[in-house]
Figure 1 (cartoon, rainbow, N blue to C red):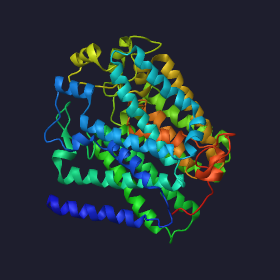
Figure 2: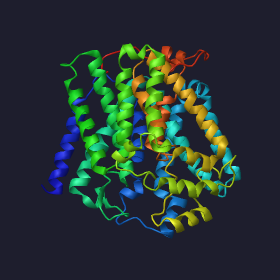
Figure 3: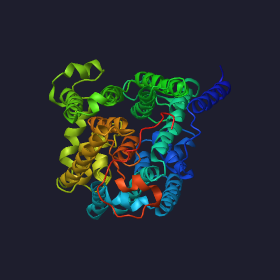
Figure 4: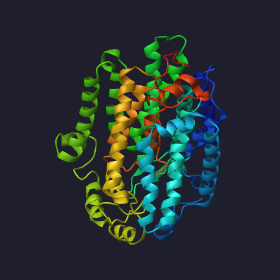
Length: 466
């Protein structure tokens, strides 16, 4: 099969997936296209990279690109952010959401404040604006009149594109979907992304969303009516897992198994009604991952996943960069550690030119110091309490939100994903940002003061196809 014919076949396949999982009753705002495009870009590659005609530059050219970014990407993303802010300004839920999520706002405020002591304040502020875009796009989804339908539509629109397109690029457009591993020269799969780890990440995120849709059908037991949802999302789960294995991206594979298991368990009434059992499940899966990676307990698990005791050189990077932070308390400033003399020193040691610590918590420490780590911990603890409360109430989407919470916490053990326009960070914000209970009762016409915050997903249980 030639590439043009394959493209036509895959286009029909993608259209078929959307047709199978169609929902005529869902009414979402046109503004949902903003977070859809934003998340698609975050899940694949930058706009300029889609139009690139040659291999990425290395050395100084790559350093300049990392430091300055691309004007095309910057202008388009800025335009999308401005439109999204206008949309939020016209929605009455916006201020209520902001008041109900003070830990997240405090974390973002500190990120902006850190520009005062960074080596490149303008760079910190530019990247902070881009990071704020992640939160803004999440709020566009959450402030939709039917936020649950908007969430389903968002994951469907992006997931039904990036996973089939990845297979198309791998099989029929090798210049786009494959690269040679710089370590041993072997061929690795990248799909719509730029590296195998990111390919595994998007398969993890949209595979979990598809698995949740299948669980929704199982829960309401309307098999005949929702057979299309089962088929379409079953294809996404199966192909996503195949891509993870083919890309040899083991962190997403382990996260899918751990978070997916908890999601399935918490979909059961007997588990969801017992908070101690939910805590036990979450603590157990995170403890298994942490102990195997860092404590040497069950280290055979790491080896079975094809990794060595240094986590493919990650521990060596950590030992190098940790003493290099200019301030243990404040860090180097938001997204400023991997710049200037520090970057050149690291690149002189590692010829593959890393630009992250491959650990989200260490990355936060390097850029924001212990204050940033503490504020992130506050966000995580607050989010966990509210997500568990949503699971206990059997709220719609609560098991998926708990799964995404586990993914964010565990994935950052070996990858730096608490970063701007990172899909794991975006879905973490989407899963842990809450709407006040009063807004859930009255929708977008709210005119009453805020009382107690409640999870977004506490909506009436309805048809899985809704």
